[in-house]
Image 1 (tube, rainbow, N blue to C red):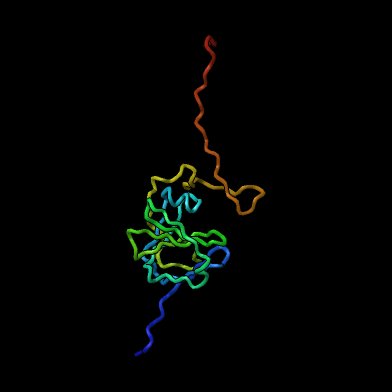
Image 2 (image 1 turned 30 degrees about the horizontal axis):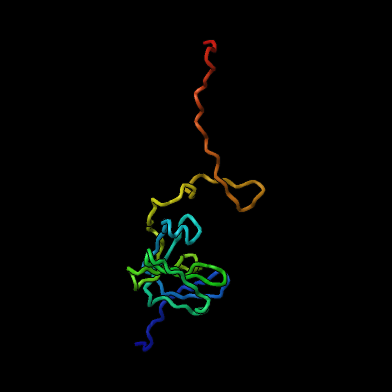
Length: 164
């Protein structure tokens, strides 16, 4: 019988500039797409994808001094980010003090859960991609564009007094 317990699987994440490195034990508790106005504004995108972990499963392994935080007293939440490059790192809410939410994009490896939930989808902006057919944009490798929507033809109208 082994005397050392099996090492937990971990996922490593980092900010854009690499000043902050985070490790989490996987699998995470859950993963979801957050379409709320608050996440759109904080992340600068149509929706943010998060993974939720028990606080005890999250470790800052490098750059704790490079983390700055913003406390939103109205929502009773704290958003942390890298003070050097601005990458969002942690999202904490007062009503779940034992949980920490992290942007899924911080992690190159899997986190043990696929995001299958959508929160506040009714807040989705009208400009969000909604699965329209895409085609390559000529002259721009790797760029796809939505095809123009065909408009229904308006009924032909003639000026008043036009002969029948």
